[in-house]
Image 1 (tube, rainbow, N blue to C red):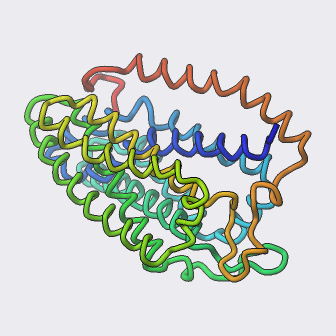
Image 2: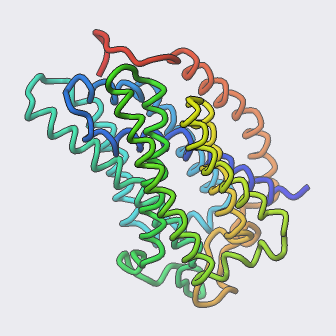
Length: 338
């Protein structure tokens, strides 16, 4: 039994789950300035209010699994990209603080400050996630010990920034569809237009990123020559993206949200296949890359950890399902609302 490969796949599941669930949270934050009144802004916040902190459990689990099962890769990533991860952590913390603090006072100025914080942190986080994905695909310079030798600004190349902007657009589209499902009346009508706008922006950025990847990042395609069946994920992403406007036009908004979610899953799968078998790719010398075998803990650790994962994951899935079922339906503003 290849524990290393199983953990690589499980990390992909955790990353995809986080991207789908917290992705629409980020999208709501990105679209938040488009709300016209304080009541509408509260509707947006309360649409994700009961879920956003639970969604971050997937990211925490992903980080814990990476630390325990692939410590060498974890050490390289978190030491080399320290400033980037501190910015990401600040964005996630500031988003939480903004959500909790905005309704503590009735002052318009107070709420505007925290509304801006909610928007800025919700935009910065997916940008940083996308930049990380872009750098992971390109590879980064590592020394003979596998330590990153570049600086923070070396990570901000054209391709990583393009992936970052595309990620933000993807989450904005995902959030617009989610908000449409959670609202009604005039707000919902305007969100119907935003769904089309965000889908159009994402489509353009998706095509640009795909063309850039095909033309300038040949290493991202190597595994698809070895495993031709993996191209099915590319086909799935195209079909899901094309299905979003079709389902919106026909009024099947739940299917549009499912298509948006599957688009994210397909893109995460494409990222995993482009990276495989590496966890950290060395751009200067492929021999210095950290793979799922060279960066892993002992086989005993991987095996024991897998049992814990098999026991714990059903609880995470059950908790997530119960929360979403409990807070299903249109969002309402009550005494305990944000």
